[in-house]
Image (cartoon, rainbow, N blue to C red; front, side, top):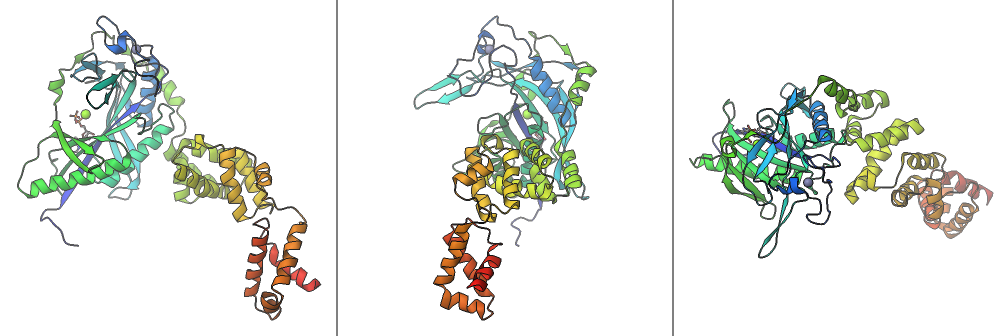
Amino acid sequence: MAHATAVDYEPVIGLEVHVQLKTASKMFCGCRVQFGAPANSLTCPVCLGLPGALPMANRQAVEFGIRVGLALNCQIAHRVKFDRKNYFYPDLPKGYQISQHDEPLCFDGELQLPIPDATGAPKVCRITRAHMEEDAGKSIHMDASTLVDLNRAGTPLIEVVGGPDLRSPEEAYVYLTTLKRNLSYLGVSDLSMEKGSLRCDANISVRPRGRQQFGVRSEIKNLNSFRAVKAALEYEIKRHIRVLEAGGTLHQETRLWDEEKLETRSLRSKESATDYRFFPEPDLNLFDVPRAWVDGVRAALPEMPEKRLLRFLHDYKLARADAEYLVGDRAIADFYEAAVALLDNPRKVAAWVVVELARELNERNCDLADLKLTPATLVELIGLQDAGRLNNITAKEVFRAMVESGEGAEACARRLNKLIERDDSAVQAAIAEVLGEFKDGAVADLRAGKQAAMGFLVGQCMRKLRGKANPKDLPALIEDAIRRE
Ligand code: ADP
Ligand code: MG
Ligand code: ZN
């Protein structure tokens, strides 16, 4: 492989992820938090930024923030301090955002990634800080004008700032999926990039490999999917190297990813903290975070995926890839364990979830909650298959129907006319017909000792029965029938 450049450049990447917290009400007022309500219907003087309106902090939002911090192995501040971050934006009616500047709620954490570092141990990305803030509203651009919807204004956010520890777009992708996976265990957010409840800005610079000092970075915004993050980083790495190789200089700037053109373009030179004129928010009191509160939140944390993975490997003797898939989403891991509690065959249940269920989720691009399958109906289906009442093919057909209908396995199999009846006269009739049809062909071959003919006859019977038989049972039945002739 020819190298285009004389210098070997190493990318340095750090991600900032905004997570919308799904509290009942907003961060500093009582307005409901809800996606998709009529524009500006969820607003009040506080989140509209009317003069004289006073904010009050939402305790539940702070508790969700503590939960996020603990799940990312962070220290938790002893008090909550809010600051004003001043900037003008049409969908920011106050002209400032209430955020946290010098005292983030959570700091000094880390996220363990399921990829090896240079020593072979799991790679760790530092979590520099995670702070609370409020979301802005939304601008809706029309042909000749721009409308503003302030329903989102004041929605609680936690911004998770990752250390500059990632070294490739692939690692950035793994960081995001792992972060999302871990947050999915906490029940604090929808984590939907589509709905904007999970948003990511990517910081990227390059440096000659071996050099300690970081290069000049750009921050990429407008990233609408994890795939976009990866593509934008790949683009931006090439651009940085191109500029440096041509003897140019990079400027710290904010760039926008253009999903259509697959390129980044400069939005503005990056503001520094002084541009924001941060100062302590005078309308909110400091409030304490007693250790008893933190301990209580910690005690209520669910088993996190890193630990659950080890337990799945140990208790259920699963292949690592299967266990990783299962713990990758808390809902799926819970579903799996509920099914295993009903049927003590962890590997068989895993095979159904990891192959068939995963395929449905993937093809429909939906979540487990959108499917009507339950652990009990899946276990019932496996039971029918084990009892020989569905074969491997019809079991999968019934599965696909159950996922949509929510029926029990037997009811669904019966409705679809797939259930193999014990002592089935239809099977006997089909065998008799096939033996008659191929008397001089395959049947004669079989009699002459050509075992390959059996496969053909089984196939013909299955076709006549439209799958309603167990192909495993057929050779014996066919031999019986030939012997009787
Ligand atoms: P700011 O407050 O200006 O956004 P931070 O120091 O908080 O700057 O960093 C923001 C993000 O940028 C973090 O995720 C961090 O890891 C990342 N980052 C900082 N410096 C660099 C760099 N030189 N190259 C790549 N990423 C960087
Ligand atoms: Mg930042
Ligand atoms: Zn409000």
